[in-house]
Amino acid sequence: MCPSESTIYIADSAHCPYGNKSAEEIIKLSEANTEKLLKAGAKMIVVACNTATAAAIDYLRAKYPEVPFVGLEPAVKPAALKSKSGVVAVLATEGTFNGRLYKETSARFAKNVVVLTVVADEFVLMVERGETGGKKAEAAVRKRLEPLLAAGADHIVLGCTHFPHLKPLMEKIAAGRAEIVDPSDAVARQAKRVLEAKGLLRK
Image 1 (cartoon, rainbow, N blue to C red):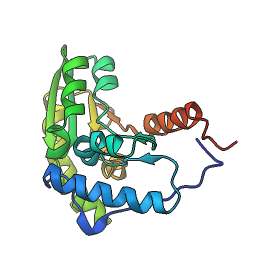
Image 2 (cartoon, rainbow, N blue to C red):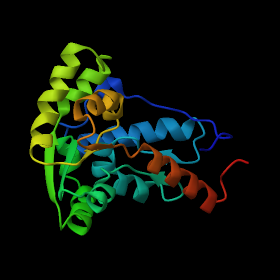
Image 3 (tube, rainbow, N blue to C red):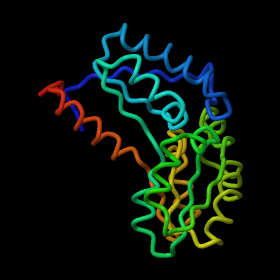
């Protein structure tokens, strides 16, 4: 969406997964990652982790007021607004579910639907190992998805940036019974909007 921009990407595999770490530890890691990115010349930072956004984005925005930060949170709002069955599911980590952003968005937009929440930390480790297909991965994903589908969920929200790697597998298992909601495009659009608003977008 921003073809003239160059991107620096940090995959903090050394400290993965973030989902089961304390907020203090995540803030420390996020600050260290931010420092690396700023030293490399970053003009804007996308906190491309739902757990890190939940724990650290308020701290980062306060500490680096001159830097625009774009965060991630599970796409509960579009799922809740589009649901016909009145049941949506969110796959995320414990850290994301405990965060202020998730709680506020859910309270605001998901009052009229049932939200099924599932901590799926094992998906993070599967993706880190490159296990995104095959019988073993399908069995693990099916174990999580089938109860949600049976409970009537017609939207399944991917609340972790590892999970879109499993989206083709999830769509195969859902077989049209539920829409798999990936927030990636919305985050890219927001990143572009912020760059434009700040006069930072390269033409």
